[in-house]
Length: 306
Image (cartoon, rainbow, N blue to C red; front, top):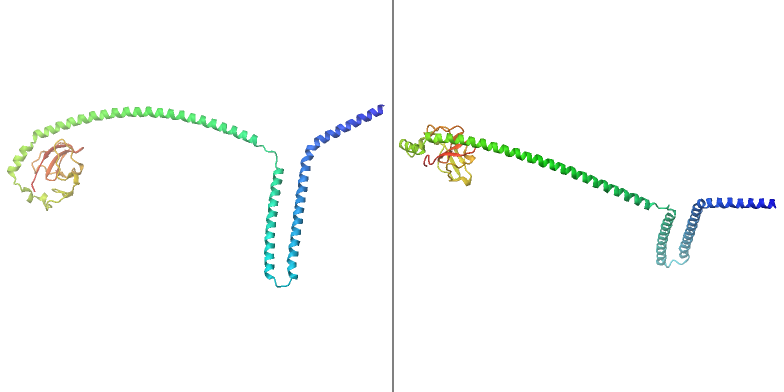
């Protein structure tokens, strides 16, 4: 009895070991078996296609040889058969190519490994979330920095405005002081020189055409439209908006006339111009202006008559 029991135990152990080996080896052998089956199937399909091609070729050869035994009275029919054979060959080649493509696609689908797309998608989603979070954080930091810079710029701008206002006030005060001093000089000039008295004395001692023989008027040849004549300078062009225009005291003379300065004011009996002023020619009038802004201090109209 003991011998039978030992034999049964050994048999059970052998069966267990065999079953365990089978369980472990089956998953490993299964892909190899599947690949072998696929290879056999592809080989079978290739053999069938080769046999079919061989049969078609033999059939076409037989068909080509048959017309030769016939009498040479049907050449047109032979040409038509050849064309038909060529079309059939082309059609067979197309079908073979399609079958090959289909087999390759099927093999590729079967040989594909398990897809890991879900894990990859999850990783990509997490990466995108992290990127978005980082971008939001960067934007917040940039906004804070921009706000701080704007506040600093506003403070600097306000400070600059205050400094500019203070400078403007100081400049205005200085200008007012200078203007007051200039006005005093102008009042002193008017006390020493009177326009009416000068006109009376000048008319007594000079004729109305005194300028015709004067050396400063040698270049004068008559009135010209759009031009003025300045003694010692000659003719010069005048913009249309200034034609036949007069300015009075307290106004500002355009800068285009400042260059035609009268230097021999003593010859004409005019007063000595205060510091920072000048006598200038404008047509047949003479103006005493400020050198800085053209402010008109005194005017002598119709100094000579054409």
